[in-house]
Length: 414
Image 1: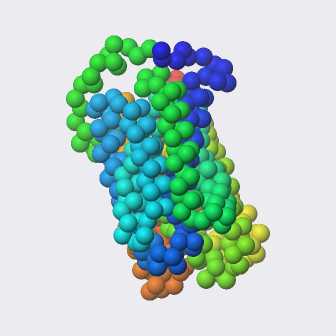
Image 2: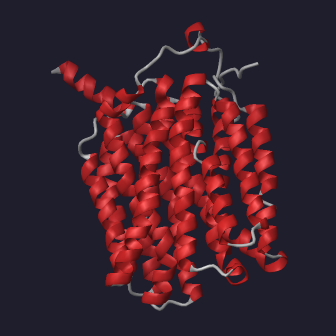
Image 3: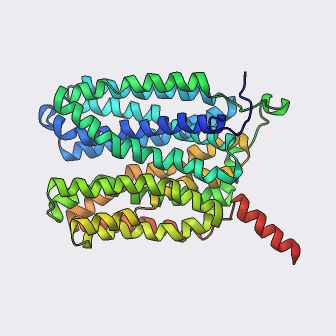
């Protein structure tokens, strides 16, 4: 039976948020695991840094393709829950199979397959959460789901867990055990997540009317969100890919000091992941992006010029605001712009564009610039990405319900 709406702390909205929080957090746990396990694997498999970059790019490419295609497929068949269960099981199995690899080619194949499985997770989870969110806390819910979950589970809990497993039992075991939480998450989705919260009206239960999906590209907000995604993913991927090497090789930090700065990034990821969307519920999506994107541009610049380790940690915590912005252009603004029956496809399109440019192309360009002009060049490219995203956000049409209603009331009185 579908859940009955209620306002208790264990309402369907809160239960769904918890399940999807863990689901997407575990996606990033698996995605980032290779970065932390690479030092344990490198000598045994005879891998180079270039090959690590190729593996990361392959995952980003397949993630982008599958996210866009699967999102549209799920919309047309109203099978989001089933596809989400299959995706979680598939990426967990692919992650575990990474422990069987014997060299670069097999590792590349398994990680690319994992990207295919992970691509649909975010757009489907976002569309399910948006459908069940109270309008006044829509931004907060999406921030917790997309931003804070990845920061807490992927960037803070993940590193000590996978490194501890690799240290005591070997890197292959660290990959194998990732299948266990994946199975538990899939079972939770199958048991407690519903395709339609509450009793859906007859129109919603019927097959949705055909809609021209190319029309999404003519939606001003969707097109701008795709562009913002490309530039903001550039900011994010370059930082997480180059910051550890930059701090040790260019800034000559110790491994411990580098770990402290990266931990501050992880803590900021969790905090700003929900804080920025929550603020946007009050001041508007457009205003929040216009304010916090330029602040995010200061983070890679701080990595270049920050003085003491403690001061740098504090500055990056304050300026690492971009992960909160991600929720706005990747989920909340599109959800408040397009019809529900094409929402998952729109989210997949925005995510796919960002992964293709920011996840697949940008690291290669930044790496070439770093080889030609020095490692700071990568950080400047990252900063430029956030600045361009902030400028593009000025063209968005405001969608936050509270801000829109206040604006309409003001116009009505005039």
